[in-house]
Image (tube, rainbow, N blue to C red; front, side, top):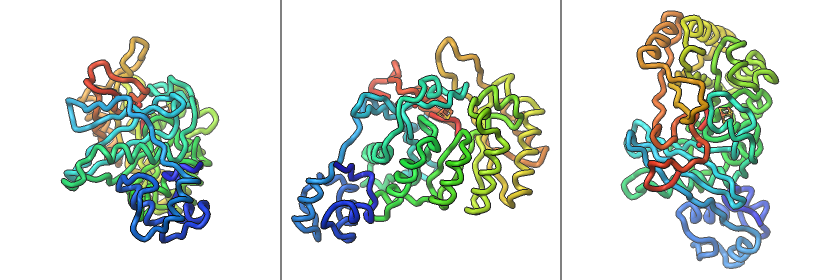
Length: 364
Ligand code: SF4
């Protein structure tokens, strides 16, 4: 049985016997409007509807909790897969009123064990299927007031899991999300964030050249990065940046570099200057200047968390030190802290303070 959310119109026509491309587009449009599978669709033959019912289904994820932040308009969904894994998805309000981005998970848990990340403490549970990624966007979309013009503008692969470790399903999901007769999300509004798997970066560049790349750096100083991100032992930053440079040359798009600042770990003047120097050298090599984001740390909220958030004055000092070295970073607002929806906090937990339910996030 095929999950119809994992199909573009072309794949639906190729894989379900007797379905024409035109009918497949109409079916996807109907599913996107929320119509049930098998209900009559103008311009779609009855024999096609029967083939869809015989070969396909529209499975979903169970919403365990939906937690709205009291601090900001972020909203987190905690979802459960059919085999009992919890994942988290975050609805992020964009600057333009009524527009939202969806931060999706690509795996239940994560094997990469970055020291500052709640998901990394879970270990890898399993890769998500492409329909499970797409379904997260559909479920967030269902929370919007579409009559009032609210809509999903973009998707960021920055929730639970390392997207490049599940790259086949991530690429399929991106293709489905940008399908014009379905959710129609412009691929240029999709960002895939990685802790640094060079082969995945190269595939993303080749197969989804309009999608933006984001890298979790942690530090431009190799020893500091390695202490925070074990993946650096297998794939040192130098190799990751070589793949990112190929991505930049092929796509012409500036990568986003994200650095979660940890007090006393990677927030010194020396760290700021090293990061600025690395960004300048990347720009010289590729002709594309990375967009550097400083992410304030969100504590994992348990007694074993060894890290502390850098106070606002320290964030300013770091930004100024980078600016005087020629690179002006952006300090990212990472919302939904009170419902553990902020970057680094996603772990499939239901927050105790929430009147409803909740899900988990990654640095990028
Ligand atoms: S930051 Fe991303 S790659 Fe690292 S452990 Fe968390 S989810 Fe995995």
